[in-house]
Image 1 (cartoon, helix red, strand yellow):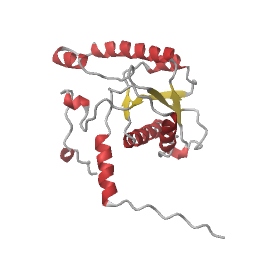
Image 2 (cartoon, rainbow, N blue to C red):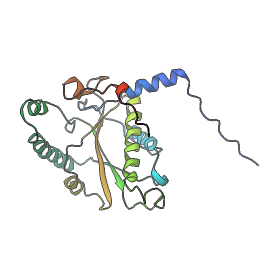
Image 3 (cartoon, helix red, strand yellow):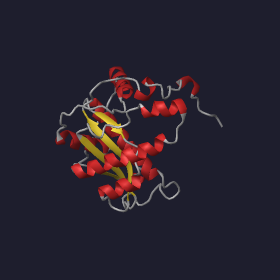
Image 4 (cartoon, rainbow, N blue to C red):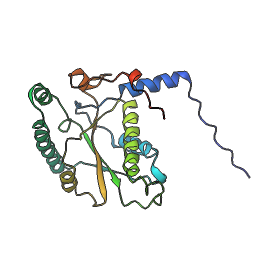
Amino acid sequence: MSIAKPAPPSFDASFRARFAELVRWRRDVRRFRSDPVKPELIAQLLALASHAPSVGFCQPWRFVLVESAARRAAIIENFKSANQSALAGYDGERRALYAGLKLEGLTQAPVHLVVCADEGAATGHRLGRVTMPETLHYSVVAAIQTFWLAARAEGLGVGWVSILDPAAACRQLELPSDWKLIAYLCVGWPEEEHDDPELARHGWETRLDPAVIEPLKR
């Protein structure tokens, strides 16, 4: 007996417009309300993120919820140290501007989520990774973006904290030796909503005009 295949979905103009709106409102959030996020919702989002594409179907993403107050405190100190080092790399007006930016939501976000790449993953049998091993990490980034959009659709905000010493963070979190930290995410209900990047609002950088980002032709 043959099994009927499910019909592919039809994404109409209304859906496409809403999706474009979702992409525009996906922001890097640094200011969170203290309201808790239900664990069931986080589990739902992680399940959806696990449908992201991965090289060789290796599915290398590994998720860690940082719930220990001591470990969170260690990550906050890690950020403060890395942030001071980053600040030292700027001079003049750019240094003053950097010093005034809010670059994380570590003390406010109710959920701290670490996303790692399992570099020892046997799944996928190394297909696609022999010539371009970095695609393992790209696969994890695809899962992060999927999680981010899904969270935004639920009204949640996500902030990616990249100003960290990753090796120290791995020690502080006691991660397996073959897991590479790709992202430390703050997740929670946004304190404020914006459809433009915070770094644009505060004059750090301007958005490139899509009209000038043209593909090279060879």
